[in-house]
Structures are given as C-alpha cells and as structure tokens.
Length: 105
Image (cartoon, rainbow, N blue to C red; front, side, top):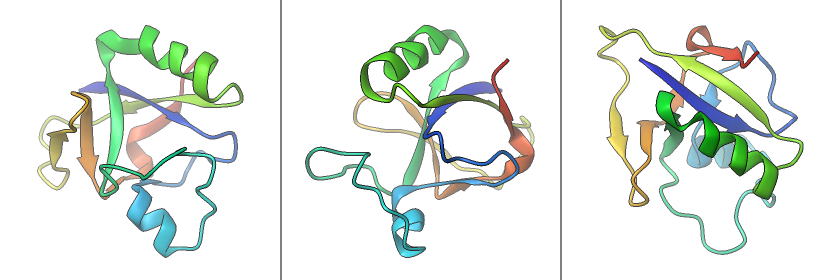
C-alpha cells in the first residue's frame, strides 16, 4: 500500500515517523504543528496514493519547507494498525518504521 506523509524539513530519512504523543514524550518542539488544541495525537496521518495533490497543497499552504515522504507499507504487515481520523485521512497508530519511508522523488 502506498501513502504519502508531509514531514517538517528537520525529518531525517532512516528514522521512524512518530505520532504527536511519542514526539512530545521525547521532548520535541511541536509548536509549529497546531495553532489550537491538537487532535488525533496517537496516530501518524497519511495521504492515500490518489491524494498526492492534496499532500502537495498541504506543503504549499501550511508547511512551505515541508518534505513529502513516500510510505510503502507491506500488505502483510499486521504490526501496523491502520485507522481513519475524524477528518477522513488514513492514519497509523503510534509510529511508522523507517523501512517503509523514502523521500518522494
């Protein structure tokens, strides 16, 4: 399954993507991410393969120095739990291992 994720410029390829709760627990500065109260803090949100244009628009509007990452999850990986957030986006609980992440070319 192919998805996309918009990460800040500081994201380093080779590291997992972590949900807000995990990042906060590790002491990361998350003030850039939300204007108001954060929601769905236990998941990493994704754009579906057919939503690349929405990911690109997100970068243009909200995170001009953001990076679009390609996420390729093995169909048989039953360790990752997919869900949908209130806004309708697909998400993965807690984290996405680095082995599934590459820079969009």
